[in-house]
Image (cartoon, rainbow, N blue to C red; front, top):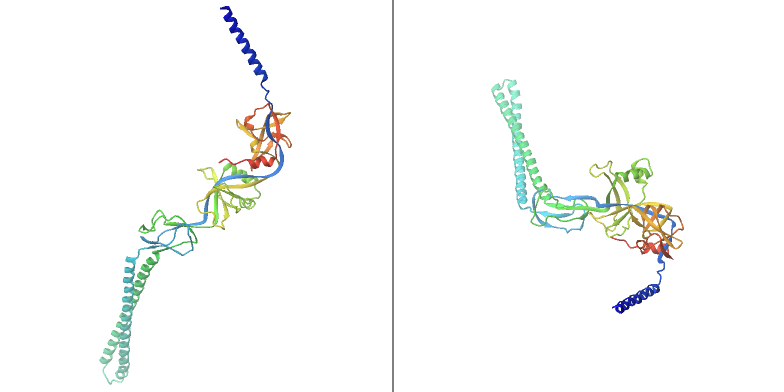
Length: 411
């Protein structure tokens, strides 16, 4: 039993020696190799960004002026149309019948006028004849050749003829009024026939067609048949909150809001695919008051659209540039955040040491620093998430631009 225990102890001793030997032979870990850059001074441009919705310069609803069934759709969605171009046709069978009846009414009224005119002429002829008879009898009565009774009879005939003329003229006037009424009725029906052709209210691109052949449409419909948008120029609407708006008023040149808008630099539009729109825009207008429901104020920017690349309903991001002259910059990858503070790792005596910095702005994969670092200081440019303060490092200098150009956007 004693020998057995001795053997076991000897085995443990051998294993312990072997383990210590293996541990002593493990190579010591050297400093971590890290990419580094120096803090630089640069002239850079930062951007204030705001989500935006895009509309055509003019957007007009296409609506029917009369109620009817669509019989023809003459255009397609997205097509460019000119002002007055026919877009839709409505059924006009009953209108054509009404038009024929109204036209016949005009003809009948004109016939009545012609008959009344003939009556007036006949009555006037009778007046003329009666007047001649009176004129002939007067001298004879004055010379006592004939009795006064004959003259009085002739004068009564003249008065009756004159009354008939007045009646004929009144009838003619009434007939003329009937012509005017008949023509008004015909023109009203004809206008409805014209309204059966629905035309483009402006020149532009036609949007979604909400009603097609067979649909009953009318002027009181809540939804328009379609919309025509003039997209030769586009309006981009965006909003600032109250704080941003007050900063805008404070920092922009000019005594009045229109002057401040006029002095604003050209702005950019970032499209939904991340590309920057080729045309520059300008802020042209701002609403006069803060919206109490949102706490924001709306701006309107204008962008030319010569190639019709954009259309009504697009979205994007407005970028208002801000120039920074001779400021300290670092790559975005050199920073990390913790508990609301932004840190970097400075390399001093082959050791990574964390430091808090104050970021003024971020642009083009760079951070603009106002405090916490100085020009020429060497900082870790990549892999800061694998370090902790006091980590031994071996600096591997890299070009500043190579670092920022290698940064890929994260969507």
